[in-house]
Length: 355
Image (cartoon, rainbow, N blue to C red; front, side):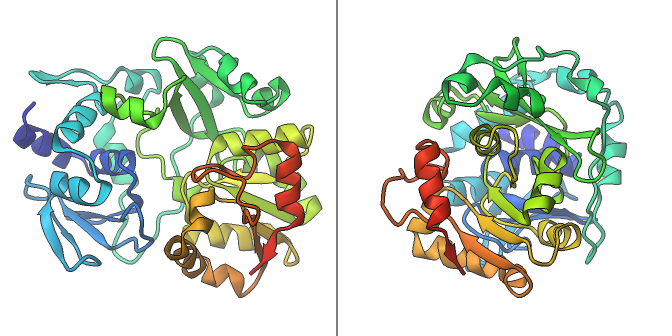
């Protein structure tokens, strides 16, 4: 498909637009009658980006950046720093599209998501109302995949027991590690399946036009769930301590270090949504300490750190909050606090700073 045909295809369903934006780092999505809104990759204003899908052109205004105007592709080029050719190639890969037309997305068959437009309707957000639920599936949706992890995870120091606890699977055909996300209320239901390309870094993935991460359940809203809560909620409540990471692997490493008694979750990004904060306040004891353990770049950048503080302002008023900040300058820019091994992780924990 050419760019015009792609825009027409994406405009048919707002969930397709969200899938594209999420792939390029945008987050905090809302669907209205005529547009999709989101935050920029480096921002936390969930109404900053406005993509209008009702006319098929995907015109966009970014209000927080001097009312920047353009189409969807121009916005991604400008604010995700991705070339136009890469954007077009990635979108074709995301939806299994060919240059000559549409190729059926086989993953939808596996998950029995037959009525895509009906599913999008269920996820539609009316103006001023936040949707807090994800569509749930039985665990048998994992039956098409190998029920064990790739050796890559084991070599990174994650225990087989942790992989079993968190139901790690492998998509042998597409060579992806699968991280099932269980619902934060109904612990035996799956709402998302994050697929991470095996043995491929972000640079290589972009060079090859292959998405490093895809979600096997379209429309999954990370801002309305906490990865790891289903498995770790009782430890969190008992310890009165909640550690929040960006990525799933950090949750698995924390659980490995604590021999199955982990008390961490991940949000899949570097912000807490309104739904996250409301859920934490409802479901943890009032004296629970919340420990923010995001990747090192959040704390090494003053702008990013100030954005984080603004993001969690409502949490700071009612909970004890601390951060795992690398005051020893030992972590690399994109490292999680768990990435240098248990001993240093313990040091960062012991030297965490109250906000």
